[in-house]
Structure formats: C-alpha cells, structure tokens
Amino acid sequence: MTPMSLDRPTNLALKASGMRFAIVAARYNPELMDQLIQRTQAELLALKADVVVIERVPGSAELPLAAALITQQPEKPVAVIALGIVIAGSTHHHQIIGYSTAWALQQISLQHNLPIINGILVVENCSQAEERVGDAINRGREFAAAAIEMAHLTQKWTNNIKTNR
Image (cartoon, rainbow, N blue to C red; front, side):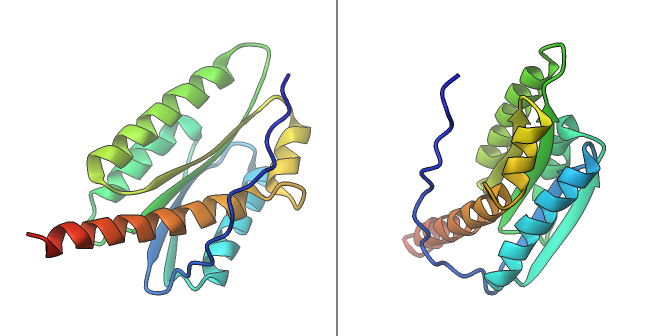
C-alpha cells in the first residue's frame, strides 16, 4: 500500500468573518466523530466564522441528502462540510459508501454552485481513523480550511459574474 501524502496545501490565512457554515455529520463511530466535529468546528470558529450549524444523520450514506437539503434553504451556508468515518470490515461495503458518497456530494456541489467538502474518512482500521481525527493528522482543521478557501473562491467568482452583467 502506498503511504498517504502528508504534504498539505499551504494555508492562505483566510478568515471566515461574516460567513455561515454547515457541518453534516454521521453518528456512526461516535467517539471518533465527536473529535472530528470538534476539530472542524474549532477551526471554523478560530477563523471567525459567524455561524456553524451542525446536523447529525445516521451514517455516511445519508450525508448527501442532508447536504442537498441544506443547499436548498433560503439562508444557505457558504459551504457545507460532510463528515463521516467509514472503517473497513470483512466486505467491500466501505468502498461502496466511499465512492457513492463522494460522487453524490460532488454532484450536489456542482448543481448548486456551493462548496461541499467531502470530509468522509474511509479507512482500513480504527488506528487510521484515530490518527486522522487527532493531533497526528488533524483532518478536521483541513476540512474547515478547505471550506473557507472554497467559500472565498465561490464568492469571488459569483460576484464577478454578477458585476459583469
């Protein structure tokens, strides 16, 4: 197995002032999920997000529907972060969930021109999940930073389109 890249993107030092974010999170693997949610929310708040709404759903397979419902609200957020932890078992179910949710989240994002960050960790074992939700590899911080950066990009190009008409 090829080792994962720890070469993270450079931090653009963007702030989230005046921005509203939504986190949709699975309830499977509750202790690990609580850590991932906490680290994601902490980063958003540290970067001055105005509002962080958190919605919980049964599992990762339900995240795309939750994200789609949120994108249709009048006061929709500037970005949605979908969080889940899918740990491999004795079947390939984790791969099915990983692929299908990634595809669905991307389609919803493109359909609504709204950043939806795929924060679903598909891992081989609990140790890998623990690494990614803890201090070793803080994916929550990375998901929050990606949401902020993509929200800025979306606002920039949406405003550019409106001003050029």
